[in-house]
Amino acid sequence: MINLFNTHIDNLSIHRVGNKSRSEAIFLSETPYALNDEIMPLLKEYFFKPFREKEENYFQFAHDVDLDYNEMYNFSNEIFANPGSIHDVSKKITKHLFEQSNHPHIKNGEVYITYLTHLTIDNNVVDAIGIFKSEIQTDFLQFEEQDKNL
Image 1 (cartoon, rainbow, N blue to C red):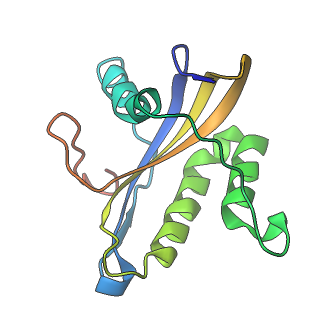
Image 2: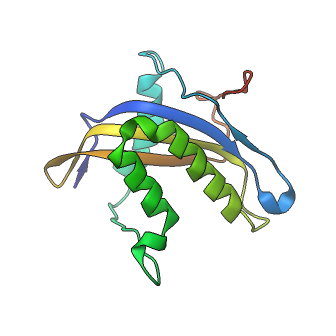
C-alpha cells in the first residue's frame, strides 16, 4: 500500500517537451523550481491525487536484454546515488522522453520531476522519484517561461 500522507517534495524541476514528429521544441529549465509554502499543497494535490483515486499498481523497470540497458533505470540509479544531481538528471529524462515522442498523437506538455522523501510503501519509509507529465493546462497550476526557466 502506498501512503503519501507524510511525503515531502524536496526538489522540483519543470521542463516542457514537445512532439518530435511534429517538430515541436523541447524547453529545459536551467535551474530547479523554487518551492515555497504557498505552492506546496497545490503540487501535492496535483501530483498525488491520482494515486488516491485508483487501484494501486506496481511496476518495475525491465529490458529485453539486460536491465542495465534501460535508460530510465539508469537515470533513477543516478539520482538515488546522488539526490543533489536530480535537476541535471531531470534534463536527461526529459530529453529521453522527447526522443521517444515519435507518434503524432503524443501531446506536448510540462514534465515535472521531483525527489520525494518520507513516502511509505508497504509500511516501509522510502525516498522516491516522481516523474509527471501534464498535457492539459489546469486553471490552478500554470507555469510560464521566464528567461531560462519555467
